[in-house]
Every structure is written in C-alpha cells, then in structure tokens.
Amino acid sequence: MNFALLLFVLLVVTGVAWILDKMVLAPRRRQAGATGQPWWIEYTAGLFPVILIVFVLRSFIAEPFKIPSGSMMPTLVVGDLILVNKFTYGVRLPILNTKIIDVGSPQRGDVMVFRYPKDTSLDYIKRVVGIPGDKVSFQDGRLSINGQPVPLSPDGEFYDGERLSYYTQYSEKLGTLDHKILTNLEKPLSIDPMLPFPHQDQCQYSRTGVTCVVPPGQYFMMGDNRDNSLDSRFWGFVPEQNIVGKAFFVWMNLGDFGRIGRFH
Image (tube, rainbow, N blue to C red):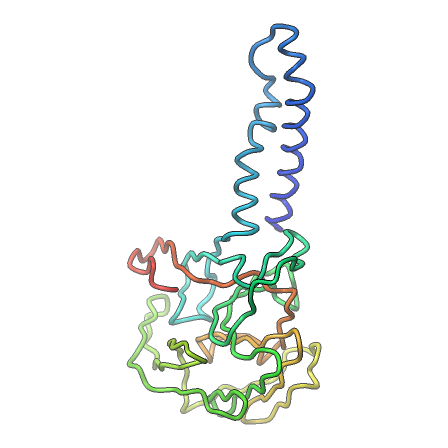
C-alpha cells in the first residue's frame, strides 16, 4: 500500500469538507439557529487539522520506518523502528518525490532510505558507499573507493539474537564516519548481477567481485551485513530521484528497549 498517496487522498477529502463547512454549511447552521455538526462533517472536516499536521511532518520533516531484515546488521537489526530525516538531501514534493529545494547530497557512509529501483513501491535501507564519479571496487570481500582500500580492522564479534549466532565484526571507515560491518573475509561472497540494470556497462564482474564507476545522479549502496545483503552489487545503482531520506535514530524496538537511541 502506498501510504503517502493514501494520506494525500485523505488530506484532500477532509480539506474539501473543512472548506465547505467553513464557507457554506456553518453559516447556514448559524442562520437556522442549529447547534452541532452533522456526523459526516465531524468525521471529515473535523479530522482535517490532524491529517494536515501528520502529512506535513511525514512529508517534510521525518518519517518512521521499520527494519524488516538483517541486511544492515550490526548497525540496525530486525524490529528497529527508525526515523528518517526528510530534508537532509533536499525538500521534495510529496508523492512525486521531485526535489524543489536543494539542501544537500548523500555522502559516503550515510545510511539512506530509498525506493528500490526494481520496484519503486518498496523502500530499502542501505549505506551509501559510492557517490557520483566514484570508482567502487569490492574484490575478495574488501572494499576500495577510487583505488584506495577502505580502512578495515577486526572489532570482536556480534551476536544475532534472531539466529542465535555469532558473527565476526569489523570496524570500517568511509570518509570521516566509522561504523561496524559483518563479513567473512575467509570465504568472500560470490557476486553476479541479478538482472540487467541501467548503466550496467559501468560495472565489471569477475570471479573475485565487482568494480563499478558510479554515473552522474546515481549512488552505489551496500548493506553492513556484507554477506547477507542484496544491494547495488547485485541490482545496480540508485538514482537521485529515488531518495527518501537519511536514517538517523532508533526510536523504538519492542524486543529490545536497550536499542532505543543507539543509532545516529
């Protein structure tokens, strides 16, 4: 279900009812000496202010999302409820997602929500690894940007409560941002494109990995759980118009209250 579209339809319906009541129906009731409102006005025009506030907050300020998979472990886990900043990368028109005010652009290391290029009705969350013009190489389980290996160092183990398993954890530094990833360097992941994708000619696949040059207006995304994430390595680049916003805060996890506030 496209919740943004549903919210917009509700906004229009209740807004029309609110204007109709203010301009026509309420003056008639006063002239007739009537008190109260018809039930259909209470349930339409009466809800307009609430729906307007929710629509503005969700469209231009912050939007909640729930993490459905483990592709971003250890940063985000299944059940995390996160907030996504809707204006960090520019103010966009609701529904159309067209940028009208340019505020900023995604940077390497950002955790970003975007519309999945293969099915824009789905929202995905991954980490920005490559920005336009970057040469991104993922070979033998190791990441390089523009010919420079991304710093990687062992950082203990991560316990996955869902699968009751321990995974080797590493600290990775993309730009100025340090974050944790899960990967098995002893058994590098086999990478093949799922289906043909736009700008696939900018990528070279081999038995050891993949190397791509990020085209203008596109972004290369990867999950922090490197061996368990279907991302740009497999389905290609994320166009700028698919951006939803920057994830910045875990506000709830009903299975683990200790995770609240853990991510920023």
